[in-house]
Length: 460
Image (cartoon, rainbow, N blue to C red; front, side, top):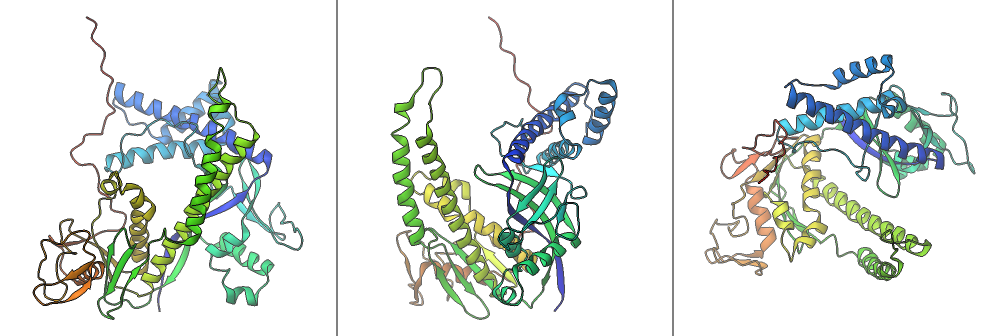
């Protein structure tokens, strides 16, 4: 079996000290100021002089300003790699706008989830033998650190790192100690190519995210896999060559989620009683210790529920792709329109249909298969998968499909999955189209090359 090399994204929790958290928060503020400063200059020069202003031009200007002693204070206090990362982020935002993937870039606020970009050439992982920083042991437990510019060494979540690198499997843990696994992970992190080191904060914990090169064994693929996503059941699937099919239960029916949901409602009720009681004269609310603890508990419950849903989604995708399909066919869904439904919008949001499609798409691409989408108006649920007869009067409440032509009786979602699977090897056309990985639908017909100028109000 041959091996394909791809870039895999990792997101690992870190445990900074109190002083490091203060420094990271200060860097986030400086990063925001640098981002807005560069965006403001870029807009001004393009509107007034029509010139393109790049991050290289801004870097040269900053060098000249430092020589004159008039450089902005937030640029001087911010490490060079961070303000360069902010400038590159602005340029990337403009590229996304020109290619139709996003609107015109906006100024950042402090409340925005900013990601600090570091340079891997200046940041390094450390162990006991190499590096200026040594790994310490607490109760015979090895620890792994990453040195960040201007921050110092921060501790990484070791078991999470081992899990993402594929070293925390039962067969690996039975043969090697935790220290040996740490050394193996350190060797991988040092020797493989890495890209895009970012530090982010989700309101509770700090994370680092980066891409690392990894090899995947390319196993033989066969047949087409049809997927019909729904609300009552998460999805129905059918494999064309092996005739494997089935229904995947709703991800929100697990008992853990039901218990956490009830606990969340009770905690929110307790917190809501404190808001009208703690109104101040000059500010909106005076939060005391009890209310802060309740708000923190609400954040933790939301986080637990999201993690359970995320783990369930990845488990579903892993089970489906273990069938090794050559082609995956899904229906074209308008997720935003589904979520705008006043009665079912929240249910569609919790079902995470868009996230499921996104994960299936990129994992199919890494596996070497094709990801195809059926036409938006293709009646996969109304067509009989055996004879092709169309049932025009089929309602959403009819969960069983009865064919009046051939007499077949089958589950509605399984029938749709079979129809989608039959489109696996149909040539691209009106019925189905192969989607290129990374291709996104832009906003066509909108000229976004220039920012809109504010209209001056006419004085009567």
